Image 1 (cartoon, rainbow, N blue to C red):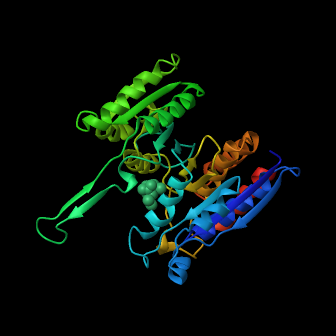
Image 2 (cartoon, rainbow, N blue to C red; image 1 turned 180 degrees about the vertical axis):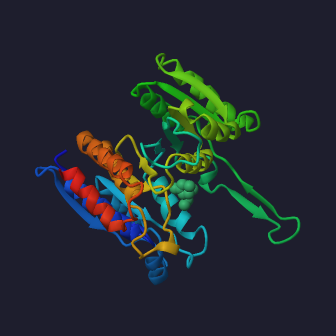
Image 3 (cartoon, rainbow, N blue to C red; image 1 turned 90 degrees about the vertical axis):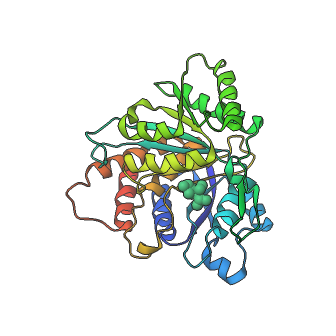
Length: 346
Ligand code: IPM
Ligand code: MN
């Protein structure tokens, strides 16, 4: 479409700084005839302290009217652990049914990796985003006693698993290598694991061109380090996906470049794009954060909205910028944003 109505949530800590650069690059890359409208929302720690609110129904109604959401980071040490995570981020992902949590990993030329050599890393993790152990089903009994029992139930529905597996097959089908790996733990999680495996094998019949593979999540952490080139598309459960995408980020350039999309493929609700990194309160306000992960999240946002050429221009700009970085003095957050804005415009 020829206009983008964007909700902007800078959030806490470095979220403020990196989102400013993301918007700078977005404005620079869009052609004249694409009208960009943005509205900023003040979610995060400050609003929580001032009002006790994290994300209200009225907020959700307002956010619903946008084409997409750009999020920086939410989280601050002044707020007890879990309050903003559950009350804002997970609430939003669940309310807008962001069941495809898309996390690409690509090791770009010249980017440092802790792995030996310069392995080919170019895969994307499709992490389920609305189920698994994240649903908040569980409880505690005999709390505080030495006999306390805590359960955290993993919820897996045939509907939820099938739609994310199908999405992952379609993404694999569209990539040159056409390979999809299911990552789970079906040797131990025999209920959820068998549901995932059965659904995976059933949907595979509809995608005969896609090569399939299954790996237990523990083994997957080994292969991500020793043979990352074996992966093309990975589909996995919410918690496994959370863990392996941090590892994936670590081996492919670090969280300074790790982008993500919380996607509702149906378009029934706006999708949300955010860097994988958090609010990093230790370096907030110092201009030290790398905005590349946010800028790459803007590229995912553009691709989701059908602006493929602009998305590719951003990815090329980040790639060129990273390739030239080695040996140069460190730049500030806004200097990197300025350089990327020049590249995408030129
Ligand atoms: C992520 C984060 C979140 C998650 C937390 C902050 C709720 O770690 O986006 O990966 O676990 O999904
Ligand atoms: Mn995480």
